[in-house]
Structures are given as C-alpha cells and as structure tokens.
Image: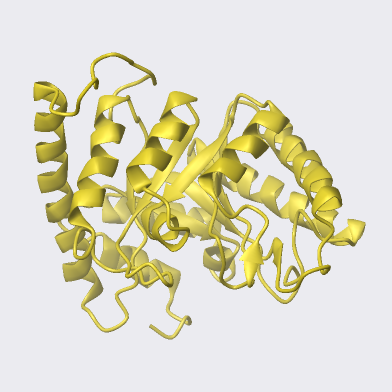
Length: 295
C-alpha cells in the first residue's frame, strides 16, 4: 500500500472478503477525497455495514498532543475533530466512535506535566462524551509509538480515566498487540474491563510484543488469544470482532479471510471452554450484558 489508494476502491475490494460483514473507517483520513454519501453507496454495493468510526488525530497538527496539548486552541481543535467523527457516525447509523490518542504522551522526563495533562484529558473526554449522548465512545490505548511513551499506557490507566470521568457511554477498546507491547496478560485486561461493563470494542491481531506488528490472529500467541476470547464469550461482550492487521507483503483479501477462519475456530473452542467450565471458579461471577455479535 502507498497510502494514496482510493477509499471507494478499497471498500469494493473489502466486499470480496469471504465472511466479512463490516468495516470501521478512519476519520478524517478516509474522508478526504470521498463524501459520506459516496462511502455509504460503496458500502451498500459491497454488502458491508459501518459499525464504528475510528478517530485519528493527524500530525503535524496534533504531534505534540491532542487532548493533553498545552495549547488550549489545539485542545479545542482535538475536541472538535471528535465531535465531527461523532456526527459522521450518526450519519452512518453507527453507534460507536473509537479514539486512539497517539500523540498524547512524551519522550523525556520533565517534558510533560502529568497532573495538568490528566486534568485537561478528563475535561476533554467528558466534553466529547456529553456531546455523544447515547453513542458509545471508547479509548484504544497504546503504550508507545509514535510517542516514546503515552499518558494512557495501560489498561489500568484507561480504567482509571473512565472512573474519573463517570460518563456511562465511555469505555475501552483493547488492541491485542498493544496489550502485548505493554507486557499485559490480554485475558486479564479483558476481564478487568468486562467486570466494569466498559469493554466497548476489541482489535485482534498478533505481535512479537516489542512493536505493533499487526500479524495474523493466533500466529504467535494462540493460547493468550484463546484465553482473551474465553473472557469475551463468557462475560457478555457484545461488540464486533475487528481485525487490525497490516498485510504489507501479504494479499490483504486472503489475509483477512485467514483471520476470519481462525477466529471462528478460536470462538468455537472458547465456547466449549465456557460450556464445560474448565477454568477453576469460572462459574462464580457473571458480569456484562447483551448477546455476542459474531462479526
């Protein structure tokens, strides 16, 4: 990929993927050259639905931070960008906006005032959550890249932020590779978010753990992925199964189909584990709501 591919052509290609039901577009990148109506038409022709909009704060405008930028004008622009993404999600009938705060971080000691950063982060999060109303807003954290370190660098930090904000529509989206980068146990992280009914989304892939490799699901950490999905199935995860992989050298259609086939196998095994209660004490606590949406 060059990054200059026509988004309407990409949607058409995605429509050929066997088993794929939905796409989640990036805002604003995927909307620079195509209108909402053009994308809607392309999605309909491809037989795909739009479940969520994924928000990106592009550089260089937000390279020193979005919600935590020391410039109030830049922070206001970051909030406005999310509000625009919320409006686009409503246009599509999507119920979810996912935010990756890629630039809210630092490289050096004494570079970022952590106390002030938390204050403006909470303030900005509450503003976009209030604007969203019933629409779900979730944070996808990553411990590093492109920043040396991010303010939200763990599942625990995200859960703390959600508690501090207190908005019912705020939640977390957990990226499997990002959890590995943070040296977390993906299953434990999922359990933490599910227990609080705050797991709005998951992004599935695999990684060696040092960087965001975006490899095919289950190629390196199959037991960890199985445990991760076990918790999704047992405790009522009702969102989509979204693949965030990077087929740079692989055929992207075949790679996506492999992800789908493999996830169906993993889900089947996880359901059997849930049915037979093979994890000690696993029947003692039941949290979460809704039915699982197998996408």
